[in-house]
Image 1 (spheres, rainbow, N blue to C red):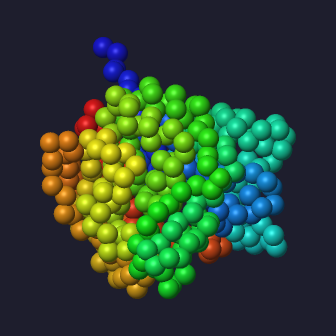
Image 2 (cartoon, one colour):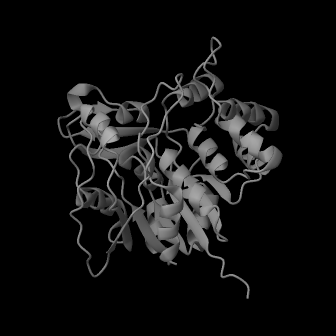
Length: 331
């Protein structure tokens, strides 16, 4: 009997989307990753400033997550994640970002470069930039401060780390990628997160037409709650606080919220506490509109990063296999 293949759309960016895709890749369903394009930190800043291209790091991570892990493609997969630790001018850059910058120049189109890279890596799915508009994320805080770059919002000055974000928007406004709208329209299941709420998930919803497309889609909509709060974005946020923010953009469109119920590494929590970040408190209740699915979806290992990586990275992440199993159960 032929398997009932569904269209699954994952919306976000960064390591959270990487984790989801890596697990779902081993299912028979068709995957599409819609990726935020307002990142301005680390090597992305150099890609934007020096090459005049849109950020590629989140695109690269999604392509690698969906790539073939065997044979020559498997070696390319490792190469695309390689971060240079030596060399004046390229230290901190990833091979994958440089490759796609070169390919964009050769083909004359960043969109064509992304598609061609997917063929080279033999990806099992589609990676779709949410927009090709060159835009920046802007956050206004309750204390009156305004930050105008995603990188600054992600790692804010210490004097506003505990202040709540009052408003967030893209400047200039971003036009949607038609491929993103088409993927949402065909979706059977839409997954939001995990990932930094204001710099990975919500930037997608700020692109004109994307939130409306999600709301009107007949797909089942799932929000994967983060494991930890984020200083400068979700300081002292509970689970309900996260869901309330999502609701400002999507109304009551979310059908299910996936919440981790497994204990987290004490060693990792001790490190997080130094940066005023803590496990998200589960205060959610199932309602007539939104179900709460509690499952063991947390990873067991602390994540290590390259010495040349200047950005702050999450130490503990969702477990790809456990999270994928939980998500597929909803189908």
